[in-house]
Length: 188
Image (cartoon, rainbow, N blue to C red; front, top):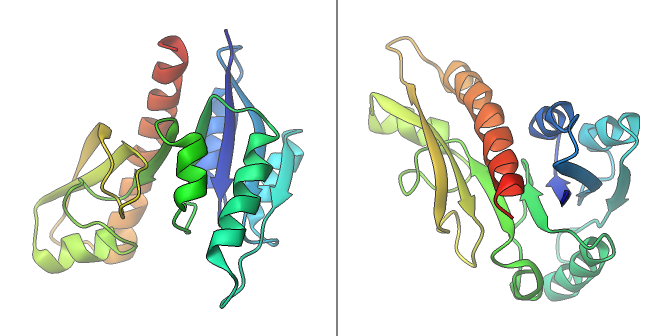
């Protein structure tokens, strides 16, 4: 049985590209890629791979509950078994989680529960940890608080900057996300 996946992105789509590159077998099919950003480069990556795309913009001051309902409808059209937030920078609301809770995963560039939020690598450096990493977790209503599915450690080097650390984390994050999605496909 093929795992039908919708991927949500906000930017360049490097996590998405790792998934696209790994889906050459029949266990996983990316059926659509969505974004709140009409100019997200990841949408071009999806188009080049022959994957349907959709955009559900959320402007500052827009009604978040209405956006959440529209996003839920967009995703539901593709009847996914799994939703993957791959660099998606918006919190999912209660309507979305009612429909897709328990089958929506996200990646984070830190070893949760440490350093949640959008500045995981910076926060790890500022705190002075010697090991950080990446986490794949089940999305819930909190900010990076869902059940942890997998983690991979990345050492913090003495001369690391936020950028160098984040780049090394991203390498592990891409591999770990692919591993988790393939594992979920094999155990559905």
